[in-house]
Structure formats: structure tokens, C-alpha cells
Image (cartoon, rainbow, N blue to C red; front, side):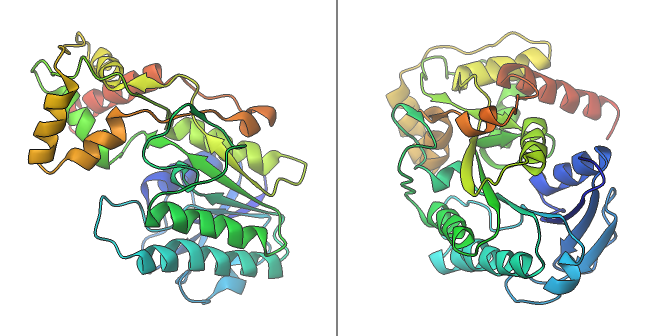
Length: 314
């Protein structure tokens, strides 16, 4: 349904930058809401400067808008971020934007939530939307509370709960894993059996378009995950395949790796990517969403494009 007018928050972030390019390429007109004056991001039809933590310029930002895509917020940190900060940036700001969208009679509000609104850093079995949401940290609680706030406002909303997102410009654990995969050394990760669901930026963007186009009222959270969960050695193998190399993983007792990560202060990071968190996207699939790629092929493509960029000096 090209030609729709979209208000996008978080357009300068990892996910938001990709959404801006993708939505614009598909014919959507995109107005970006920025916290401070900057050069207009490529693909934007216009911009409004405002602070989501305060009700400033909301009427101007949402004038004539068909839908809001809200990707701004305080990202997950390993530790040390006060719970009040997560609440202010993720819960209260989302509620205020949702209230403004309702006043502006916006047709649909798409909120980029997180799988952490559904579960902790690991989970037994396959996580589904029918499971009772049970976040285990301040970040997850702030995202779930934001979803609850949207449900109480009265507008048509949908919360996408993506698992670990990978793609150009990725940071955090996935960026660290890419650096490990790019190293010339064998990696002692071959015995790690925990499986993780992933989702690419392209698949995520397609999911946003799917819910924007859905004719029926949604008003629910939807899990976002590609259907082929991978173990840590399988992720390394996929990345190294993209680099034209063999997997190069060797067995090592997981307990020893855990001890080494604890000593290095990386235990939490290791647990986030080496334990089970498998999710399925029943609701999105019912709406017609099909992942752009498998996680294996997507990781290989990401590594290959990173290698090409390095060769070209980009």
C-alpha cells in the first residue's frame, strides 16, 4: 500500500536507519521524528524535532500521518542502567506518543518491542505468543509495560517482539561474534549446543510492512523470528562460509568456556548467545509474512558484504 504517510522514530539507530531506507524504497512517504536538529536522513520526506520523553511537537509530527513506526528507545544494556531510565525512555515515551497518535487519529501504531518483553535471556521449549509474558529484567519489563500502555489507549497497535537482530551496522554480542569469526584462529566453541533464533534487518523490515498492510485490526504483540534457530558453532560456520572459509570450531567443555567468560567479565554476554532461546512467529506467518532469508544464509551474506566493504575501503 505505497503512498502511505509514515511517522518514524529512531531513524538514526541501527534498526531505524534500515527501516527508513526500506520503507522509502517501497513507496512510503516517511517523516522522521528527531531528538535534535541533524541533516535529514536519506529517504526521509521530512522531519520534526522533538523529545519523546516530553510532549513536544507531537501534533506537528503526526499531522496527516497514516501510521506510526516507533523504533526509538533505550536499548538493552548488560547492566548498570537504572530501571527508571528504561521506564522513562521505553514505557512513558511510548505511551505519550501513542496518546498523541490516538488524538491525531492515526490508523495504526507499530511498536518495535523485544522478545525480552516475552521471556528472559534464555527459555526452555519454543517461545510462542500464547505463552504468558514473563520478562526478567528492567529492559524487558519496560517494553512489556509499553505494550500494556498502548493496549489501554484505544488505538490500533501492534508490538513486534524481535529476537536477536543481525545486519549491517550490528553492535553488541553479534558484532563481537563477527569479530571472532573473522579471526584466523580455530575457536573452542564446537560443544556449545544452545540454539538461538535470529532475525535479519531485511526480514524485520518485511514484517513491519506486513503489519502496516494488514487490513484487520491487530492490537496485539507478535513475535518476530526466522524459522531456523542456530547454535553458536553454526553461527560461526555461517559467518565463515560468507568469508570463504571453513567453520574452524573445535570441541571444548562448555564449563571451561563459562569459567573463562566469568573471569573475563563476559559471562552474561556468553549466556545471551550460547543458551536456548527459540521462538516462532505464528501471528506474523498468519498475516502472510515470509522471512527474506534463512539465518544461515543471512549471516553468510552479512559476512560477505562486510568483507566486500573492507576490500572497497568503505
